[in-house]
Image (spheres, rainbow, N blue to C red):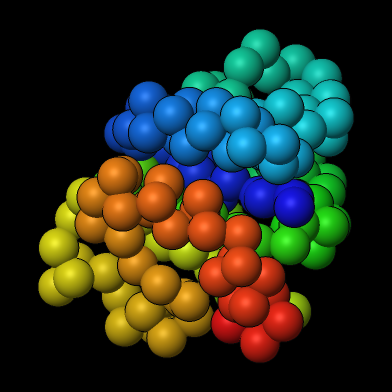
Length: 165
């Protein structure tokens, strides 16, 4: 199966990257293909503006202006949505970094719109998860252990895919 890992990019410093890394390694260990937005070739769009790494994306609008930022971000957005559509399932790491951005929530919407299972992992409380995101999700996990256990059940994942949930 192909999994897309949706994480905070613009506010990555406020994200828990160690959780994403653990899930990625676990899925790859099970023989799944993992699409990680940090690894996507469209990151070459950074070269358009001379961006050195993803941590500079939040500040690029301060240096390059609205038009250049729009151009680069549209390139990134288009490619991220293509990758979401290539995936069988999307895992969203919902945290304070995602709360401050828009990309992961757009990816969640795309997964929902395309009938792909959306698994949300968060260490926040249910009260802190937007109702809209709850509606888009297939399942929300509040512990990494529960998420990993669920992802190991191939029959359940296939059922979720078949039902378009």
